[in-house]
Image (cartoon, rainbow over all chains, first blue to last red; front, side):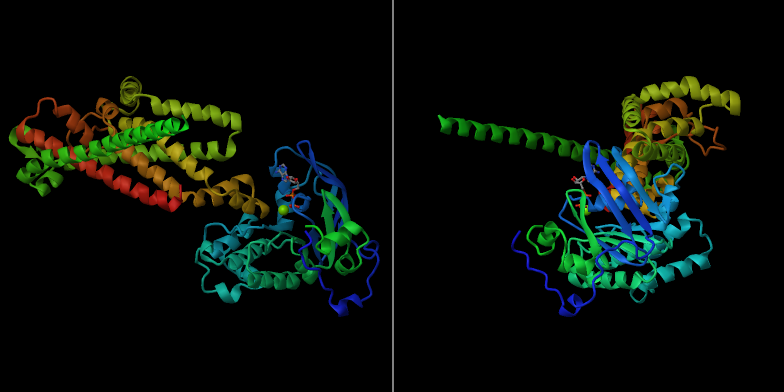
Length: 276
Length: 290
Ligand SMILES: Nc1ncnc2c1ncn2[C@@H]1O[C@H](COP(=O)(O)OP(=O)(O)O)[C@@H](O)[C@H]1O
Ligand SMILES: [Mg+2]
């Protein structure tokens, strides 16, 4: 589509030194190599190689159906739910192959949290929503749970809004609050990685801005992988950006590099809004 | 030519519509007629006996002009409660299994079984109770075997299809995103099912229980055959009772005058129970959104 506005680069940013490559500068937390993924006969990911670095925000962009959701669902093995999904290649989390035979999937999902496109708080109280994860992983003491819930609410910037409404039904919250509650719920199990699949696509601009702020604050402690349809959002919050097309990783680099001087003309077309 | 075709289809539509309306009216009309019959037939008797005396009186001796149904109300409630205690957990676990654990093929097979169970006539259940359950209770627990326990067991089985089908619908309609949300937090499948899906389906499951209650309290033939039918307060689970439905079917054949009116009033009481149950059910259904 030609109607999209071109993204304006803030001048100060373009003046920054942009490293040419991502490799070799620091140890990655998630290492995806030679990943091929098939849904039955249809190949959804083609030979994806990608390093995801700790305490950064990595954005996945690309047109609908290019495999972004498929890729992040591979990182916490939510693809296991799809009966005829086949995976080749490897994904290492901190050096450990998550598709290895002895892997404890539930432990993996505790370490790699996920926030979905549509806010999906459970139909129970705010407190029980957040306490669900810790309870799942064996926390029983009330005082301990209370502390974890409060901490998670604080981290998700919800404490002020909700500290007197812990017994309220989560379904009574606004869409933006529900999504932050889902983030709090994911944080309550103390994950290392937070996967977010278009977390703001169902939200209004103000709620979106709050989630973006939140993501920026959380990257101090968490490794965040976010799928987004919104170029501005990727530019605003991410450190690295990966551009996907038809199941292929076309280009992966520092976000500023991707948006200012992409190496691949297809990336250039996409980020400048020439197709979408 | 075209015009003719159009006018013919219009005519057909009109006729079809008329047929539907008549059918719908028949349905409503029969409910209204039953209501009318029960009220007309029951109220004079109720007035003569006295509502308090009728509902709370414990003696039922038509020959002496004593018409108290309190023990039969209790009897109905006992066997119904027994049926729910047996049928609800069993049915709920079945529904959970069918909805979230069984493979598609096994699920279809079991579903057939449930449908078959729903299709068995109640006299067959009664007969089964008479030749299997009653002798078993007699030999293992004592008494005659005709008992609250026997009726509860049979009714518990009879309400299974209702409980299973309605709670399964409720479980199936819980959004998949709740399941995925729980799974993504590292919860095992069972935990997702029992701690997230089950509570989320609570109002639908309550609806299933209410419907099962209605089915059990209204059941007649199977119960009459195995429950003993004595009008008294049962001393234990292996003691017999009489239910409201049993009272009507046992005496309607020869009752006349006030006795007959008292039986119709018994049916009226039953009808009010069922009405309340339906009201509750609809309330729950609306809450569950199914
Ligand atoms: N469960 C599934 N079964 C079969 N095909 C799927 C499934 N999920 C996604 N796909 C296919 O995989 C491709 C990538 O989908 P997806 O990862 O959802 O893309 P994106 O998130 O980038 O929009 C699409 O062609 C889609 O049709
Ligand atoms: Mg997607």
